[in-house]
Length: 277
Image (cartoon, rainbow, N blue to C red; front, side):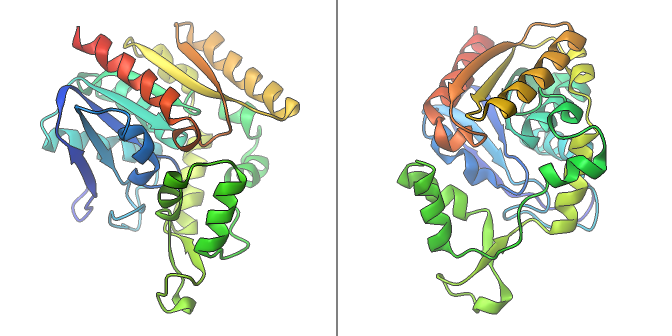
């Protein structure tokens, strides 16, 4: 990490290969709460990326490459080698970069609805088009009650709500009360920089350079048009990479660590069991 960058790290001791969980854009390590609960007895390391959660917010460094370097620095500090690394969404692409540039740190990869889709097919061939699909909706300042109602409307369990609320902080206007409007912790300018870095990524080139076991846990989109686009983006990556990736399709939307923690946890545990033998 660069001098002056402090990352919040949540490290639970356990046996066997360590499991490292990397969250996605504008999220925090809490996004993995339900999955971590399904990995009992294992060492589980979770990190808030720079600008997210309880980590510091430096003025620069909001790229996939820098987040991967940050992760490598944390694992070096913890003296971890040959971990199983799982990433959700943007975190999956960070995990891929880590495996390419620090293969000594990674013994298996779990890509959770991210990292494996060609972003120019999934989001748009030009950044002008893609940015509107990739940037988060900030038109309103929701309240915790609104976010809780949204989570329940999506069918998320009650214990997923704290993971969602952790992405937000009170707005200056609400005086720090628990019921007033909230805003995402990630600054909008840093969100744009990270989204652009993700859009520029080439997952096929990254996959072609790694040899560790790789599992992709992917959501079945409910919308047939979105499903067709997703399949084209996936097929393009796999055809270009020319290496095997185990895919596990599950029902749900993009937020699989909250919607399908059993499936995600099982995929990670299977990788860790394989790394241990």
